[in-house]
Length: 314
Image (cartoon, rainbow, N blue to C red; front, side):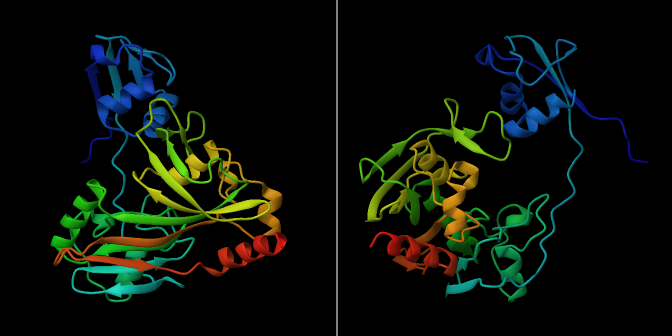
């Protein structure tokens, strides 16, 4: 018979976390995400020195932090399902490069019921690397569900290992095109600002003092009356990094209502997502170290929106 008694863990707060919020301390000490830590605290699952504590309370060194651990999540299953619009850009013994359509996740995750790149490759008969977590085998990098563009997936074990190392060493050249509102000043530059969880919205990210170092380089491709088309290179790869940085720079991606874009402009351009596309991808091929580079066209919704903005500027 399986026990239904919840597992409770307790640890003394190290002096280095003196003054931290409860949710931040839980995340650091127990390995949870900040969002999950906040959920536990909000649900009364956390106590400090025997008293139930809210997520925003502060801890002091030596206090005993006690957490009722969440039940283990059910394993996420890969479903082999064709992905409409997903194109195979390149395929060899080690890697497959795909053009991911908007509305498709890189891999399965709790709560996601839509199609995935991994599921689409499985449905097409591709065998990929078995390295990585069970639900994301072969995945060495990701794109947001609402972002289209190029992804490389490892087919061999050596490809997985070598590509992951290239991403860690920042060897991979990832170039995005983004149509942003207004005109950045300067027209080419670098945004260096830490990105972390949004303090009040669990589904968003933000520039925060305690975020992870994040660097985005951008160059102007073309300026229009109401917007600018940028070529963007990521030095780091944080979740929503481009969207957060451009919004914080007061030039959100056109159509990105989550991060402050003009909804009237988005509707007029027929956009239901951010104008952001992973345009180019370059890396050292894991088989021989030769540099390879791939490029993809804009999907119809982005191309049509860009043509409208260009026409408005004539």
